Length: 448
Image (cartoon, rainbow, N blue to C red; front, side, top):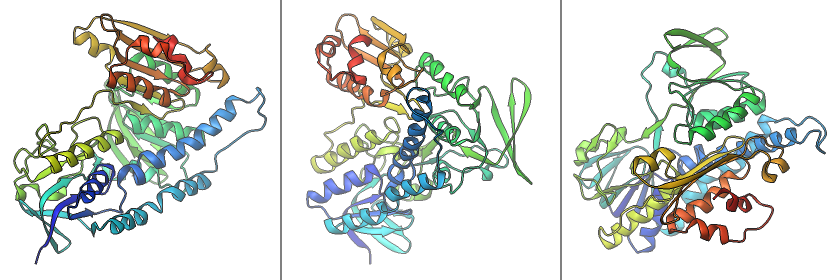
């Protein structure tokens, strides 16, 4: 006999957890299901463990930059110790999450959920029926369709390495490639990035990415753009990566090859058709309320929905939207204005709002202030040469349209621009704000 619930949540990451806890607090019976350890990508296999490794690499890099400026000695990273530090955070997460669900009276299930009807799933032989479902299964690496693809390790595999090999190739040029290459280079690996596009980090301002590439070169990262990986072959002492660039064949030897070429919603194993849930091109077909267009009992959130940018704050936002729609009826729509994005390179690069090209494309009248500001105090006190910004302000309204930062504290300062964009604060209001000095935020007035 099937077990009955008001809501069944497939996944236990940020979007899943946020929705499950809110709906349970409202008195609904709730079940959560996951084929993997509880906690989701961000806490276990993505943002959080990555940032812990970036923290170690950043500390060492700062010490190296300060050599001859009061810091002596040659710092280095002990990779096993850094990984142990990372595990001190990630290892307890699944048990802690499962206990918290039990404490709230939320039923927990382990295994692959497969729909067997519009309102029912099978989980390793257990049948669950629910009035409503939430698909919050996150994302997985995209299939590349090349020979030897099975030799690639994923970002999850990289974050679990017990030792870092000497020669690493990253396939792709987005967040994962940029961040992992900076970590690996600081540890001492020979790193090559093979990017099919004409530049890395296409979601960030091209001028600022250009400034950041100086740091890639300075730490010895070999970035090859316009290069398409065609095959990966296992050989005696590692791997042979074959690619093409400008009509020429390129061969790169590696001890490790990392998939960094994008992710897609992880929905393939759900047997969606049996529940009448439409998907097209690997994406769920949703309405403006994050509800399935073809099965009104089903909602989606986070990376599985791919309604907004694939970022953790978006997953949290989606969770609030879905919970509101489950409790109130469909009255809530997601609002992705002012979502900041950061690539945690060393130093970080960040963006929020419109790009310069987007603003021109919308026919907006605006002024742009942009500068590579390596001589500003924020850069000099950190002994960091890469520091700069580009900010666009609408002429008539003084609204901040977009902000793009690279350098020390960019990952924090971007949040203040996000606040301004989301809540309509003007450039004048930001200029009149008294920020603590000297901090990264105290530069904002000079960026406008």
